[in-house]
Amino acid sequence: MVSFKELGLVNTREMFAKAVKGGYAIPAFNFNNMEQLQAIIQAAAELRSPVILQVSKGARNYANQTLLRYMAQGAVEYAKELGWENPQIVLHLDHGDSFELCKSCVDFGFSSVMIDASSLPYEDNIALTKKVVDYAHKYDVTVEAELGVLAGVEEEVASEVSHYTKPEEVVDFATRTGCDSLAISIGTSHGAYKFKPEQCTRDPKTGRLVPPPLAFDVLKGVEEQLPGFPIVLHGSSSVPQEYVDMINKYGGKLPDAVGIPEEQLRLAAKSAVCKINIDSDSRLAMTAAVRKDLYENPGHFDPRQYLKPARDEMKKMYIHKIVEVLGSDGKA
Ligand SMILES: [Zn+2]
Image (cartoon, rainbow, N blue to C red; front, side, top):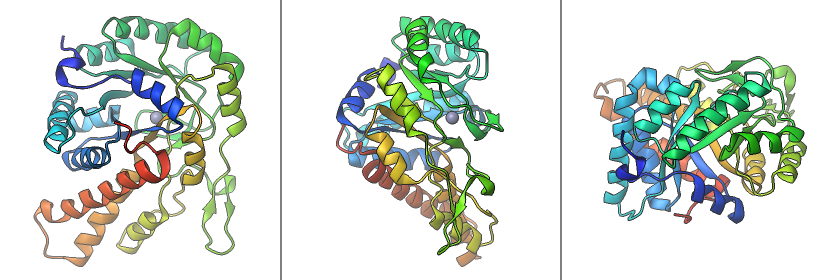
């Protein structure tokens, strides 16, 4: 058993309270490799932005859970080396699917866990979430729960259709589970293909897909029911078209990839939404930069040659999100 506090990590409690009050949101970036983690920490440290490092099931399978946890511990020390005296870094389990997994993360130094029982019947979701909360809170680890179902494909989460969160359920759910934050479904979606072309309209000038707007009425309903309660949005990459174009230009094939427009996320960040999950945009930035470098430099074979521009591109993207979309710069 190791407490996250010994590792220099923080939980989300104070961070979220400040974010809700301050009208901004904390970035939750997934990581599964060193370059991505360096880019996240450099961006957060330079901007003094609180940051949540997320570990998904796919990341655990790819990189090994133990290694990722030690990488996060290293990230705290790295942030200090970069001059960030009191780094506000959360290590968070993304989409925990069982009590045992959440417990193992709490015991191993994570400062926050998500229990995603949103696919279970309502009462079962409450029971499992409460069980995780009761355990995690003993060690001051904060818990994110989910109500409603997102569409889209994430490594461990796949659903054909979304079911918006029902505002009339949130008070009962939050009260009975004791969760610290709640992921809701208002039309965001996992992956780089968030919407089918038939769900979108097409911009006549650019020929690009324009996604349907988020259900801000549902968000408003939730806020009215639970004033000041921290709300989380999953699947909130914007799928920047510049990266999609770069990937396609240098030999890739991503037809009609589409995400959530940044102006909608900007609006959400000003509300009770205090954690916004971004994963696909980092994948796109990295892939675009790697493809471009290898295309332009057929002689490159040292991974450092093409991973350095990839890291720079990810950092640029993280900085953009923090400053231009979430507004979390200067808050830590
Ligand atoms: Zn998610």
